[in-house]
Image (cartoon, rainbow, N blue to C red):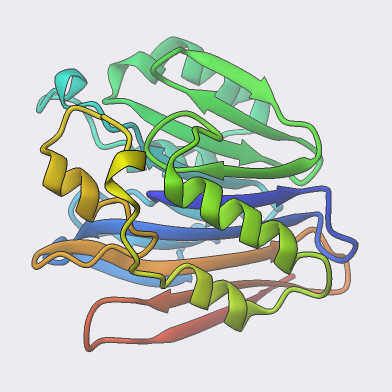
Length: 246
């Protein structure tokens, strides 16, 4: 994932509402949102076998974004998507706490949101810090939680307004399909080429070989019904998938 808006214990119907875009190379083999043999619901990175966001049968949730800093990148590090997979298939929340303290620094920089519908945590591998999040609405891209990047500020404000009533998934999908570029004087400096930084400032990225592959919406924590939706955003390959969670 490269852009996430998350509402935690602020909505009357769904204690957890997540709206997220996955940005990736179009050629990277991917399986869309589906139920795995292990029972989790997630898309799957077929190159390394991990995932960027998912839900376990017991309600545990996790979503990951990469931390953008070319100076920190190492080609010999393991895939960060394995962290989400391992948690959802093998670990409790408390076990993940300990695992991150021990192994989080072994990966290229990442941010992780995770919890079990009673608690929600944010972990930064760059700082090796974990925060227990209080109720609120948060935005996360490829820097720290709530870093004031233009697309984080823009979407978090709109997301907050949308959640004043019942969630409208069409409005949410539309918000995260916005290809408008940020003003150049508002761009962060993450150490990459300025023009590329500008192209990556859009909520929905559109480059020749890289961009927003999919948008996901998770509506969870309601005892009478929960939904996990995914929309493929690859040019000329639009597909909508909806799963109802028990």
